[in-house]
Amino acid sequence: GRSRDDLIGKSHWDVYPDTPGTDLERYYRRAVAENTTVRFESFYPPHDRWYEIHAYPSPDGLSVYFRDVGERKRAEIALRESEQRFRQLADAMPQIVWTARPDGNIDYLNHRWTEFTGLPQSVGNEGWGQILHRDDSRTANERWAASLATGAPFEMELRLLDRRQQSHRWHLIRTVPVPDGDGKVARWFGTGTDIHEQKRAEESSRFLAQ
Image 1 (cartoon, rainbow, N blue to C red):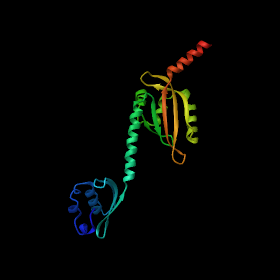
Image 2: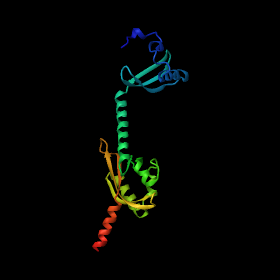
Image 3: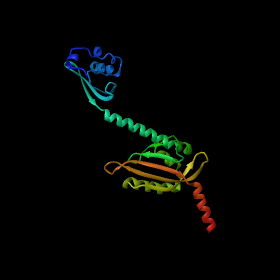
Image 4: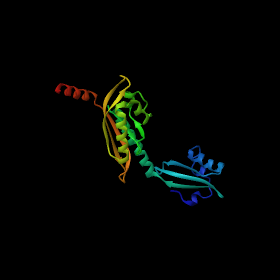
């Protein structure tokens, strides 16, 4: 909303008195002091937009390039809000819930995981080796490797160690792929549902039938 004639030859800090002391000034002065290009993002309230800004020294002083990244920033904010809602939902569930990258590396475990296993939510894939019953380990690893190779869902009944009781409990483990736009696996979503009492009831029924 300003004309070139209103700005050329004038000090940036005089024309925009709200910018001194902000990141904008700090990055500008850093580019000049270090004689290097500085890239950063800044929100401009009058436009209600985010801009990616490149400031670099030039023979005339400082050259600045602005690129509107509002759509990307809104998408990033929406994604963060979506992830936060997912985590709130996952932490409220009685099942163990996790997510993994396409290669199978776990990047999220919900609060129920820590309650049941006593292990931190940041333990990643290493935690499963500590709680999986040794009689189930080999088959589970082979089937999970097959799912990663083919993109097929994983489903198996496994025994997991309850650290509080120091005993194993049966769980139904389900892991399903979420495809991207090209049909490739973008993420894996998994759940572990405690079915121990159900398994005990089934065993009792078989015993009585025999």
